[in-house]
View: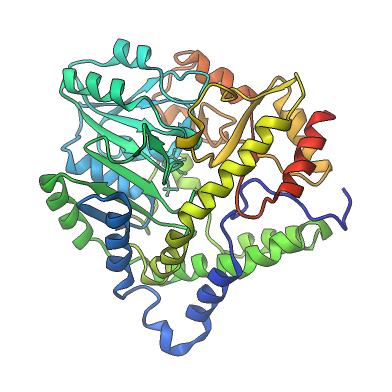
Length: 418
Ligand SMILES: Cc1ncc(COP(=O)(O)O)c(C=O)c1O
């Protein structure tokens, strides 16, 4: 690795800005802000802003997208004995949220575009199906007209998982506004971030009442946890900057080891268990940071499209294919990441790393991350063959605000030589 060349990341806190870092640090060092680290009116301010953005009646924030999902399922009355349809090629925290309601996840296979297969949905929907979770993977919308029709015919609830797709559209309408409700995630690697956070949006008054009561009864997040989230900013800022000098890696490794920063997914969650400190309310300081991010959302999504367009036009290696190329409605997709398929995905990621380009590995397992306890997922190996194939071959490219056309060219040149 050339230590004088800036490392290019996929993920690694892709929405980090100096402005947000200064804001986070201000909560840590200014004594008059300490009281407002967890409590304050920014939580409701950001909820109202999100309602305006989507032109939807209700938004309720939670500590994370996974908690938001747990509470929306509960609000819909999902319980033991019910089935929740969910696509394979998803994240363990999604599965946990379903299982913690007592329901059973029923996995749907996917298409080449990484989204659920409508044909498999029609096959697996049953009298026990209570809800369908629709994941708009990497920012590409599922065919919502077909999905909603099937759900209506079978009288089941639809929850849209917009963790990857804040601002994406289907036929010109925001995803998240088709189903009975939708979840949003403000995790570090998502479209807009406050390191951790999530929300439910809905137009349904009854669901809204239930969500309000769940939210009201939650504790504030622990102060130690919120400090970890704020510490994420200065540490990742330095970590990104000095990564190629090995110093960045050291800073990040050390910060994780001594619990100065949070984990995206905890060991207990990988084992299908709940952690003691969540679910909780969303913190005021993080909501303040999200307000900044919200203002940037459309501009950043436009930027993502521009970078994706560059990849579309310049990747020319028959060993690495873009399954979306010439197949999707580009103007509606927000390209949280630019997904590729390669026969030698692992070798490709290793080759990228040696050359200072950390390629993404979403999702390198049919339920990610790869080191979970699969016995806790109710997933039967072989039941979603396409999702398994994609997981073997997935590699993703960054499209975030830190990637300019020069960086995109560096990535493309590297990939074309592989
Ligand atoms: C597809 C998908 N849905 C939901 C979530 C949950 O979001 P959060 O990390 O905010 O809990 C994730 C998170 O990692 C995800 O990848």
